[in-house]
Image (cartoon, rainbow, N blue to C red; front, side, top):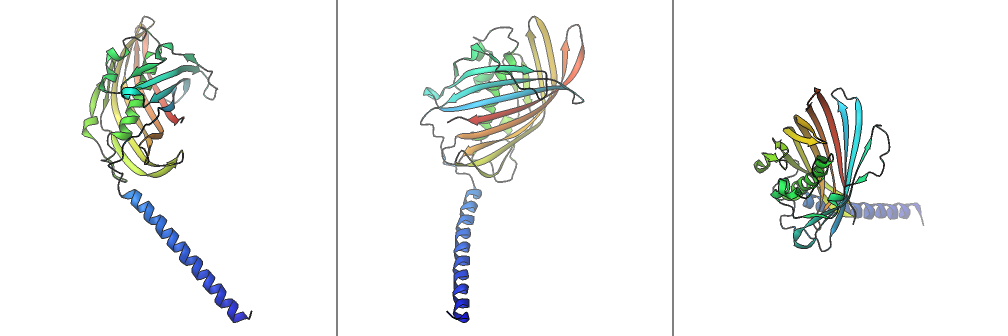
Length: 286
């Protein structure tokens, strides 16, 4: 083969390779653009079998200068897609550590939450929902938070799926409300903002990334632990994201962060201002 023929063959090979690349890239780019136009409004939640999740919430307690005091881990297994739209909690354990980098022990099983079954609704914040839970339980509020946090993440994932737009914050007015906390106080959502920030892949499925942000939310809690009355008043910032499958609308992953500054009032003890930060993670198990 002479030099001129070799140049022609190499040139043709490069032309074919570049053309194939441009075609493939153009097709993939078109697919991406299609996904980013709008979330599918007709996508229904499919739960042909029960879906299981592991939810973990870690509380870091500090003073207002950021000096560490102690930490608490609340972890439980959550199952949804049960008969009649019910959900269930199992193996909820609470563990403590006074070392910032310390490893948590297994934790104490919260027996009152074993097979705790209910249908998610607005009634989840009513006292009657928790009527069978033990009185004066020091872990009461942390356990209820597990329930309420999961329901909030589900609301962010599903309730406004057809309203969010790519890279535009959306503030549903219906979420701007003061919520009763099962008779122990209230939490007021001032201005929750949702944002569809893009597409990613989790657990082998394409997912929409739904971000949420809520700042300066007042809270007030009055409770009794071991005969001691405790009054809490403060504010909360929280934010995070939920990954929603574009195949079956199931939650594939979620994370939330919260920063709470509050004043604690305990009879006979000087008022104390504390800072609690939380990291909440939801991992899909099946």
